[in-house]
Image (cartoon, rainbow, N blue to C red; front, side):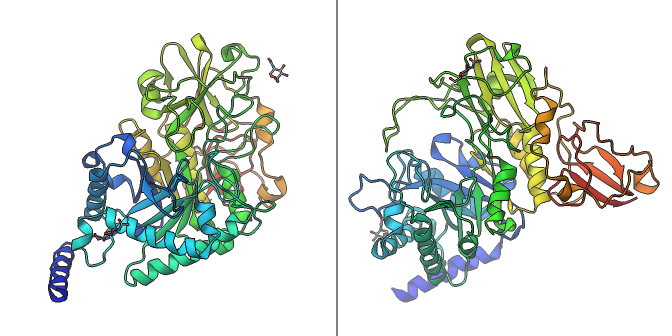
Length: 522
Ligand SMILES: *[C@@H]1O[C@H](CO)[C@@H](O)[C@H](O)[C@H]1NC(C)=O
Ligand SMILES: *[C@@H]1O[C@H](CO)[C@@H](O)[C@H](O)[C@H]1NC(C)=O
């Protein structure tokens, strides 16, 4: 028995090593996609070149199981496609991770993490779960585990998520112990292959007894990266309309103060390494019903009163009661990008009849208004994602994540995310115009998110006149000009600068996260 197993394993290994594939896990920049069975995207149709990693969602923990450590598949489980995904991933060199948790599947993480015995059982279950459910390849694979890692989507440690979840102020410290033990078990079982351990996280560091922790550096030793869910910031639960996934914070007092910029700042301020952060992006929008005609507001604003009834979003939105946790029969109001492209936009930036598209200069996101029924949709598109990806690259994060792989339209958005890999001659904003029917924010609002001048100001060089070499013919930077086209070049302080996103009044400086990218001396 033993001999034949070794022979079988050796044969499998020989076959595998005949055509070695280099897993793109080695890449510095990741593009992580979530594949979920209810997205109904056939695995065979995926363009695997567009992703460096794919998370299969979800295994869930629910209170209806007598043992809190039991992991089951969510009700949409599609084993054939999951195994096909693992097989295709292995062929294409794209690591496939098993995602455990999610909004509906995080009910017992808190209970598990708090107890040494339950942690041990859960870790064992997680290892067996991944191993068993990726059969049959497992049986012929010497490594014994065909998936490449575990992605934990505990929503959220120390904070309420879905109303059925257990949570306590000690969740984060218990989570750290769980991760330490899980990492150790993965390394023990796979001494020759580093299996990945990642997580989806909020825009703020994990909550402790007194709110978000000031120091989460200890988590970095166990996670390969954490992907920040920098979306679902404002929606049906908010007091007013507002951005789903702002790049920069909207105006204080009107918008919840969360965004891509804020999230990177908050996690790095809490000592989490920037190169282990992944920026999560939304391939969808969220809608609400307003109480006013947004087309006739003066000035036009993204923040108006709304009703308390969430409308049906795109055609696929349902008000089915959550299978695992009854949160009421309500629509999400979500519009997938492909649904917006089919119904509300005739090109990525042109509104269809009945809709008006606006661009919000402060949050750097588009929004739509349908006057016939006062529908407001905040969403992301090629333009806003280009800004986020360019910033992610400039900020030195690990990469980008997207939710989810079924929402795209003809690969329009996943194509934008490829920019994270670019090092030279990178594409700039593929949208040639940023012109909205009406610009949505008043100019002074922009200044509220500007960094203090003491940080961004260059050491007082004066603007240069058009110079020689690479600066020949390039206009000097002007503090009063709005630079709307990404990739616009200016000269300043004897250097050539290129803008990463819309800007006005931001002095070019070599601080890494500012809008102007230093192209070197003229
Ligand atoms: C995993 O697979 C093994 C071998 O087929 C089986 O004995 C075991 O019961 C399975 N465990 C789970 C939790 O499914
Ligand atoms: C918006 O709602 C707030 C709070 O209910 C209310 O005080 C305010 O008058 C409303 N504004 C408009 C323009 O209806």
